Amino acid sequence: MKKNPNPLEPIAFLLETISPLTRLQILLAIGTGEACVCHLEAALGLRQAYISQHLMALRKAELLLDRREGRYIFYRLKDPSLLDLITASATLSGISAEAVSTLINRASPSCECPQCALVSISTESLETA
Ligand SMILES: [Zn+2]
Image (cartoon, rainbow, N blue to C red; front, side, top):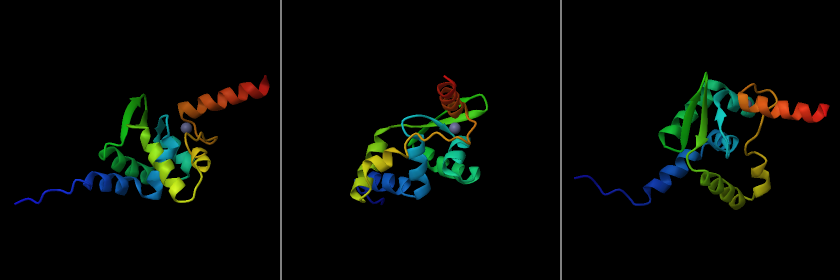
């Protein structure tokens, strides 16, 4: 006979899934927007294969949604309240919510994805204005 699962199991699974440092970094870097693997590679300074592996785990746990556009696949959070959970965890760990917010939606100057290109174009036009 199969044992009844503990009703708290989904919580344990969620926390376990997001707990690796790289996954926390990925989730924050995606933030409230979308990010492709090449963006995460540039923003986090980690190898693409390594990031893909973590993205796959997050997607399998149904924490991420993806969308294909041309040669890019963009990942976004299925439920952005995940960021509130991470921010609350940060506060409990003695890290300020402001410190966490600087890690959310980071654009990277070394990234060539369409979204970072938009950011750098708008920055350039501000500088030349
Ligand atoms: Zn980018």
